[in-house]
Each structure stands twice: as C-alpha cells, then as structure tokens.
Image (tube, rainbow, N blue to C red):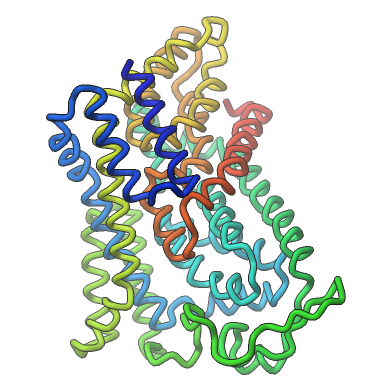
Length: 459
C-alpha cells in the first residue's frame, strides 16, 4: 500500500504543477500532507516536517547566502568579462546563443555547485533571450542538462555519495566514466545546436549594429538600432529606448560596478570556491562569510548594503521558500517509509535473468529514481541494495557505482533539487513549463551517457 501511495503522491504532485493547477510551493506542502493523512500517520506530520526541514536547513542557508554573494559579484562586475566574451561569440544569432548557454553552464559547473552555475548562466544569458524574444525554457533546459552532466564531478555530490555508500574510491568511479560523460556533454551541445537552429528558423538570423556593440558591448543596453531579421526577409526591429525590465543587469555603466576592486573580488571568489572544493569549512558557513565580506568591502556604507540585500531578496525568498516546502515532501516520503517500500518494490521486481546485467539495471533505474527522490535517498538507500544484488552475480561495486551516476542530467531538473528553483526563478519560467520541456531531453541525455558507458565497456 505504501508503495502505491508513494508513486501516487509523486504523480499527483507532478500533474498538478505541470497543469499549473497549483504553485510548486503549495503542491510541495499540501500534497504530501494529504497523503500523510491517507497513510494514517497524520499525527506524525509535524515530526516528519521538522525532520525534513532540519535535513534541508543547511542547504537553504547555503542557497540564501550564495544568492547574495554571487548577486553582489554580478552587481560589481566580476563576471562582465566572461559575459562579454560569450556575447561576442553569440552576437545576435539564436543558434549561437543556445550553444553559448550550454558552453557557459558547462564551464561554470566546474565549481561543483548547481546554484552558482544557474545564477551566473541566467544572469549572462537571460537579457539576450528576452531582448531577442527567444524561448526561455530552452535556456533553462539546456543549462540544466549541461550542469547535470557536469554534476558528476567527484566534488559535485553524486559521485562522492556513490563512493561513500559502496566504500570505493571516487576517482575510480569518475575517471573511467570520463569518455561516457564526454559523450553526454557532446550530446547536450548537439541538442543545443538543434534547438538553436529551431529558434533561428522561428526568429530569423539577426545582426547587430556594430556601433551599438562597440558602445555598450552588449545588445541589452540603450537603444536597439539596426537589428533586423534576415533569412526570411521579414523585418523584426527590436523596440527602441531603454532596456526592458530585468535587462539592466549587464549595463556597463551601472552604479554598482567596482572596477578598482575587481582583483579582490576575483581572488575572494577563487578562495571561496577552493575552500568549498577542499571542504575547509561547511559550504553554508563559507557562503555566509563570503557574502558578509563581499558586502562589507564593496559597499562599506550601510544604505548601500541594505540596497544590495533588498535587490536580491526576491530570489532569496523564492528559493528558500521552495527548499523548505520541499522539506515537507521529502520528510513525508522518508518518514512514512514510502521511499523504502518503493525502492524494495522496484528491486524485488527485477527478473532473475537480469542479475548478470545489474550495472545496466542500476543505470536505467537511476534515471527515474534520482528524479523522484533525493540523491541521498537513492545513493544511501537504494544503491547498496542494487550492489548486493549485483555481487550475487559477479558484478563489481565499481560497475554499479559508475552506472548509478548516469541519471544526473535528469536529476538536476527534479522538483527535489533546490538549485532548479534558482534556475526557473531567475529565468522567470514556470516550473511546470520547464518540466514539460526538459524531461524528455534530459532522460535522453542520461541514456546517451549510459549507452556510451556500455559501448566503451566501462560498466
């Protein structure tokens, strides 16, 4: 019964948000609360929620201060050179813009933190998508898939969890998987190219007035002149006048720029990311210290500090609200035992004949399971059971562990991943729209990674 209710709860949640019948926050809270009553454990709902909030509180704190930190870094111009380089490559060609989104997301993902990746990627690319009237779900989908592939880095989380759960070395999991992961990233780039061509056909091939580019180094500031749609021959002038709301973030003349402090901010960011990778301090503590230091040095006057915090308060509230709402969902799933029953049911229904192919089974199961449950739930709850089943048929723990990270491209768009709310929130995209667009492509990317691993003999 718990198995059926678990799947029914997840299905109900997804249907409601994809059909836009409820907001994600409301669905994350009310749906599990209702099912908790159905299970007959309504009296323990408070305990489940507190347990869920307790487990996710460090993540919420990390995201809150990470948003403030990177928001300040964007304000002061730390990422402007990267943005200018991407914009010069992209020009006003939708195809280049979509490919540039994938490249930028993959590069920034090297820090191992999805929230950081999405904040920088959206801040750089959102103005272009808005100005050229491109599909924003293309941006969120491509960024999520690129980050999902790169999320398998040893310091990114899933690989470390798999190594810990199965007591193997993380490098022994990751290094042999590099060719398969490279194929996954290549597939994301090819997909970005295809989606970019589709956007180009819809919008036409665009060109920018060279003077505008030289004066502003971005198509986002000031009057937009000389922007025409080619290809189809139809004119498509962009509106003249000031940049639209939300497009001022890359204004090269914004008052928050701190060019004299550029190298201080760059060094601070490098030290922060290094400390995060080396685990010198817990990540929430690092971002708390980093945000406080960045605000104090760049904006020494109290009114300016308050203004910067207020400027990013909406993103902070949206993301932290989503995280604590997700805590209700995960708390009920785990507290009622639904997750355990679902996992045992899935493992118990694996045919005996598939025993020698448990690595393949693990890879296939990792795609839906890491979407419907947290990485902690999958890697510490399900993976050891799959590994034990594999051992009985001579399949090594390393093969099981390598196959288990194949589902990460889809996992990064899971409603249980806090970073995805940073992505859709900053991009002003409905979570349901993002889900409808990305699920099929992300699942296909995961299958490409798994298929490549099988083809190369890695699993």
